[in-house]
Length: 90
Image (cartoon, rainbow, N blue to C red; front, side, top):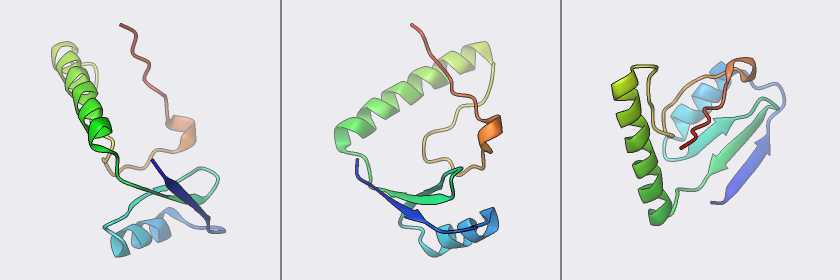
């Protein structure tokens, strides 16, 4: 996957939201360092693998009811201090 990082000094979350709304065809992320990252779409094989992983996670969570499952394209705001990576061991 190819990414393009663009540094925009002092961008707010509201300004980033406006950029996203004006460029709905792009997959954009705002990093904690203030970089706006534009990502290319995944390859077919990667999309298939991601779908399989999401299905497994969904099924596991449906049984355990320990949280909420979203796919990777979910628009969300996650301050870095509150982000906790999920580690799956199997």
